[in-house]
Amino acid sequence: MIILDTSAVCALASGHKTLNLLAGNMAKSPGDRLSVPALCLMQAEAQEGDLARRVLALSSVVVEALDTVASVSVGTMLRDGYGAPDTCHALYCALPRPEFTGMSILLTSHEDAYPPGMVTVDIDSPGMLGFH
Image (cartoon, rainbow, N blue to C red; front, side, top):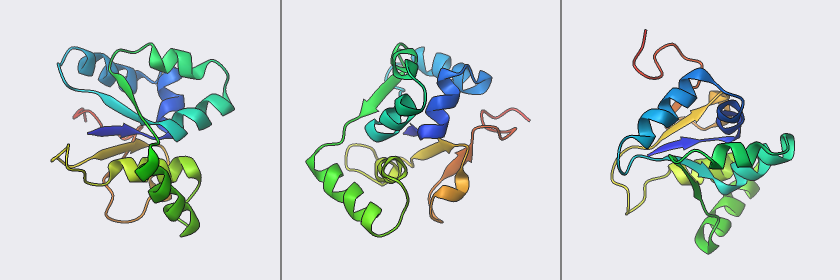
């Protein structure tokens, strides 16, 4: 699963070349989606009006809801000092789940915001899509 945090959502909405290429490629592959945690979308929209509309117009983007279990887990992470609400929701979404057996990848421009052991990829890294 590929997860976009707030910084990646903002970059995608602003026309980030590599992220838009990724979104386009994923739209062509059945079942492949870019997951955006709801609190990341909320924070991005708070920073720049109309951003959510641009991101949600992409067919490869799905929003990860903040349901009851996620709310409690994100609240616990927040209380334990793992970061802001949007960062904690992105972290929660990247944790292993029964419905997804692979390794989650968190796309961000702030790799240092996440604890060691999380697979984070800087959106501006030269090899993000395998290009060097």
